[in-house]
Length: 573
Image 1 (cartoon, rainbow, N blue to C red):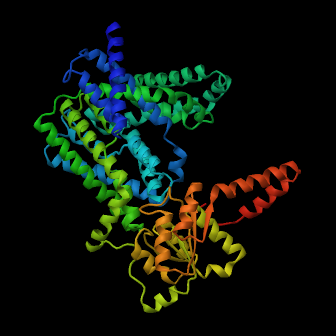
Image 2: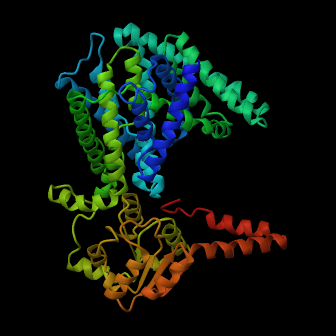
Image 3: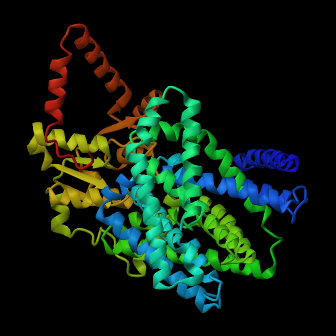
């Protein structure tokens, strides 16, 4: 016990020190934990030598990590996912898994006879890192964009695919119909038990202890380990039980409260797992490095084939097809979890686990770098893709007659987000005749198709490109509106747009938007005729609400707002 505590202490301290270093060089924390484990383990300084300690640390981290992953699987989002997301997820998951299995068999990796290296690596390259992707998209304010929503939808359905794999994993050594059927029955018993208890018993218990945070935390952990042991009793893995425990809790009314309480331990257990995983990594041999580089190359190529091509075939445009492929171009931490399960069950080898870990590290570094610069990289890639024959939604420039018609559009809206959506809705309600004089410039394919269906003119293109603005008729517009804040613009800013428009069209009335108060003066100096500042409008609305509340007229104001919200039918709700 003393040795285990000593090893835990070393793991925590080393992970923290290297975590600080990773933060300073803007690398994922997972990489720091893997390196910390490698440094401490048998291949490094050998400060942690006990195999028992390594296994105990790893299994604890693995069980709790899968519990947390289960808590974050939103079944409602899966049900509500749009056709594009479901089709893309199916193409990516099934396509990548099938291609991976065929490829790894082709290069000589075993599948059968107690060894399933090809199968585990096919699963590994199919999954993408939720931790890395969500963190980068959050930092870039892209979680709520179309490519961001497609990316998150694929990640959620990947988690569902993992559940299916874990269901048959214990039967791989005897993969007969009867064995698979027995596994399905066992999983059914596990899921049914978990859902029934979480539906009819746990909500009442958690309601009783809701005012005692420590009991909520202990109760969640008790549920996790109880279901893990029940899964072991059924002949399934503890990891499967932990995952189902998390998924079942995610569906009941107190899930958010439980998740909030348990999240305080999440990072600690994730750190433990990856430190322990790092301890199992041996010094890379030529064979390990070679297999890792093969994994990296296959993962990058497969994302183009199974993400970009399906999205492009569904007419999502080159940009919205490329970005999810870039976002998903790395291996998941879950890939390492699955391979570690395979190593523990003797179905694959530490050699494969080491190659997967090295591939994960390489892809995490490359993937983070590419994602941070994905917008610039798509701009560079789109002309080349067009030359290769991939069409975009801007199929052809307008002919002379069309150009003359375009120049009659008096109002040009540069970029289209929620403010632009509400602006068009208000125009439709109050000044419908002006809609005929509006042209929107944007590269969101959903917006493109929706506005076309409504008969509203849209020019598909990137407002950061001068050519796009020229083709949209910027030189002849009377009013130019930029309603998208700088925090959401890609490749340009409101100030750059204003300066460009003022040079090209000195007579236009330019309306821009500012996030920060000081930006207003910069925009006016650049040539804007008026600057909208959302915070001032919201402050004035709050004054109106408070005044109405003081006068007892809040119900009247609410009724007025409800009338505004009724049947708006906005493009972006």
